[in-house]
Image (tube, rainbow, N blue to C red):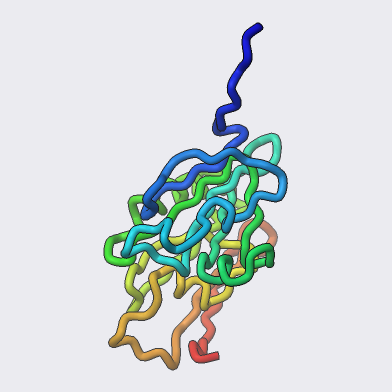
Length: 189
């Protein structure tokens, strides 16, 4: 009689990479949450961003790519809450370094999101620029707020004027017409 050992595969596991001491695959189980995979800040390298993690997720039979962001500090402080993101099979968790560009980890995900785009469904990508620590493109997360985008960019630089910002967006109407909207944002609010 031969006994097979259960090993996590991409189909049944969750992958963690970036600024963690133990990157790799973890077995997925129903009810698995972020705090079950990264159980404490001591699992992170010293310069890891504890407030912005990205989870690359594949959904549906067609394995459409989406992104979910998380705040590890909030997840650890409230285990089992909405802040402690439930994980799905094939999720890939990216933990960023506060002192280097996030581009190496984010760019492949951005490229995947752009490849899925169509004229009626633009790429789910947003950009942050100006006085943030790591300006660039980031995945648009469901329910994302301006504060989430600033968090994605590593937060405001010390020299940043944190009172006002400008939000520019475009709206696709009837699958063809793109109309740009510019809105003033009070960052304090």
